[in-house]
Image (cartoon, rainbow, N blue to C red; front, side, top):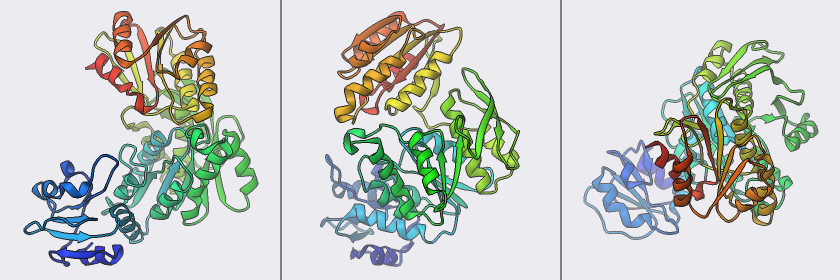
Length: 449
């Protein structure tokens, strides 16, 4: 992409420099700039990227896209736009339209990142694939992912949201050819008011859909109902364990660090055995989703099976670690809502021959539903859990409803670290789970460094 293309796309003004310079990569972080990149000076609540253009140039940027007047920098091309975030999104939208490739977009209340990882692992067996890094799933992260396209033959992107309208913006940038909805739970219910409204917000993904293929978790009540009501409007592909679906898991065998099952379908993968290298029923559902996407994109059967077996998860998602004392630490600290808490606790309870310790913190953004949903988590922490440690004001409701054999309530991370270090042994399985803002990953760092 040349500077003159960027000027046209963004309606920008060339302050200085050469409009014929070509730009291959874009970055908003001066610390990650590579030689020849374009630096996009985004504004945040606590910083103004316009103030760091000199740092970007010192680190190799040859183009700066800014939204306010800055001093000219020798040898640097400077483009001024009205809004750098909109410019980023407009450039990404333009770039996406230059590619005629499969684009799989994943959204849902729970498991977006792990499902994205699994789908990408499958798709990459048949295509050179670009995927969302980490959880770059918002109005900044998604366009940056799209701008990373080079010679890839497919792309798998994740779409997150907190409010109405956010996924609409993302889907119109990414223009997916396949939409995946993992589930409709209670994440962000404090902002949206009901699960039905969450469904409505997630369905915005369809507004940018190129074609009509939608893949949904048929075991989720609201998605099951939606699929039945819209089967004549969309090419809906379903997966599930309980409800009759296009792809189902049979003969399930669950272990601490893996699962195995047989696929039931009307396709070539019927009766094939799948090995999932991560424990937990939710990863069986994720794997079925990967199978559905893989077959839709005509990835060979054995390659689909290999892709699932090679899964590498984004960190802090069911990340299995060993503590310095030899305990198994399940670091699932990136985010939390009732549905993901329930799944993680079920995984912990299924572990055999270990003392089970659940360290749980607050789930955020639940609004008026917070007390009720924390209490529901507490009910899941029954006598199969040996020790429950809670952290935070809302997590006290987990403790109140729990029937764990021992309950320890802590006010902060430091207190929890002190408590767990005194009691942990090599024979423990320790689950860490809370919203990312609670920073429970600091406990994993303290135990495992």
